[in-house]
Image (tube, rainbow, N blue to C red; front, side):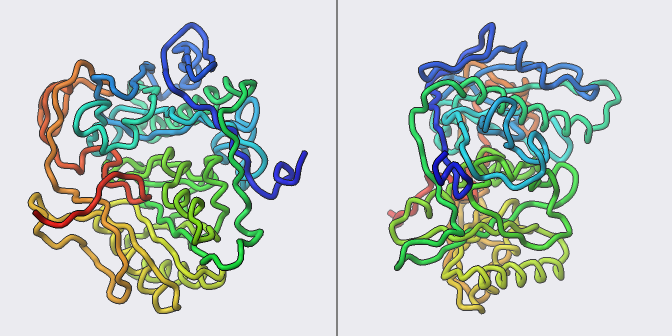
Length: 422
């Protein structure tokens, strides 16, 4: 095996999924992913789940996914996963080296009701489709029914583990197929080319308890301090979402795996991706200040020239970004924060709940409160009615952007742009 395969970086073996259908057995060939519902259901055999149904929704279809919870990009390092999703599928050890097969253009999406989950929608076609990253993927949609008297915590755990194992199973179908692309990701700790700015990504992870938590190596960061990992570990599923609030601002597992800010720095000719720092988002002010100060000191110790700070959640999370930006600025590290605005339906209100007091470089992901109209569609997955409006899920809907899954994603995915007022 060459030097990269020996453990100094990660090699992505990319299999492009161009179409999706249900069939008798799971298989991948020539861009077509066939999913066996019988095979898929085996990963959800748990006393907490009474029933699981598997469906498909692809880009351009007149279809709507309601109540989406999490989404996962299929990946595997060998039969049965081979080390991906550590703490859930693989051992709770750092991944991010060797070779990883991924099914690009596919996602496993769990859809249904969980406590604390806010209602969300994904339109696979129409004028609002461009707002959600999952309108552009071929989605294997897992709908479920809770078993009588099952604890909701057990339902959520069974669902999360089932989705991850199904994602591995689908990627395993491509292990013997020739990849469409091979992408080499060097180890950032090996050092970067001379002359490039050393830039890090500070990613805040929501840590607000059951149904609003994010996992690293299968464990919550709640109560902990910031930690630095290799960005390559994201591709192997080191970060798994278990939070279901704020649909437009949610960072599903899929977007941790494909982290757009990380990807943009990797592709830059002027910057070197030097570090990924993961931070909890505590609620108490003193804990926020401690975490922010520690994150800034960690970035300084890593020798960063600049850091891009992202978040998950609403106004509470604004404070986490703002505090980190200010602490980074105090240490001479250029800080850029990615925020979503909560500026009212006309956009005239104060955009941030808590702005920074020193740092000034901010990127807007869009306005949480703006209204959009979703045209009627032919079919819906994930439920039959939109509870927020008490309407059939296939009807024409007027909803705030806040309900469109991933529309204001603060990890950097999106197509929102700015222009001069007319």
